[in-house]
View 1 (cartoon, rainbow, N blue to C red):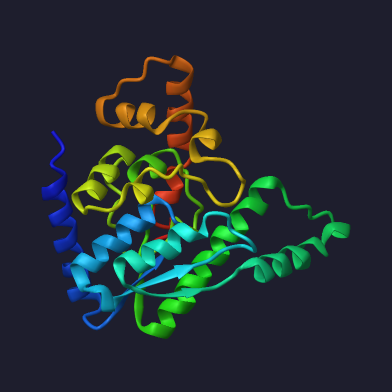
View 2 (view 1 turned 30 degrees about the vertical axis):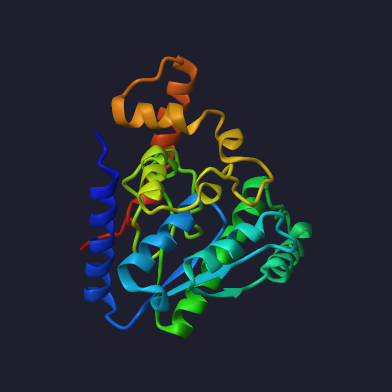
Length: 245
């Protein structure tokens, strides 16, 4: 049985210990998407460090239809925040790369989708360097298991409170933190492709979590897809392979 209260307290103590060892005077810098993961990470950091040492960064790409969730979270937690619109940066980078079309370089859909995530992480590290911060990774185990994160984008960060917890467990942590349901049950979207997470993946987090924790998946096609994604995306979680003399 998953003990959400105990794990919540353990994470809070782990965050405190991380900052004690890796930046006693630093703040936690959290990119806020309005979804459950970033909301929960920000809340855990507030519990661990105090609201004065947590900074939210909202990074819409032009107009973001659900940005009010992030704004409401900032008010709910009482944390400082910055809003950095990444549209011009993304557009400029795409235009510059596309100048090479005549030389045979044509970006595919995956490259185009991943660019905003990497621009957002660049933004978070710029803010972090300016405010003496440490960047929070907000990925969970379910996403990481099938590679549903952008390498050096949302998959990056300095510390990762949720990366060993499934989506179902993350939601239980949110309940233990007494976060309002609107931050927990909001349909997760990647904010890039216009699709929900589960639409992108082709299966539900409920099915994925059961397979991760219990090894049970009654749909053979989905099981094979999960296994294939897991194997193909392991490189996202490993250190850079390096030649050693």
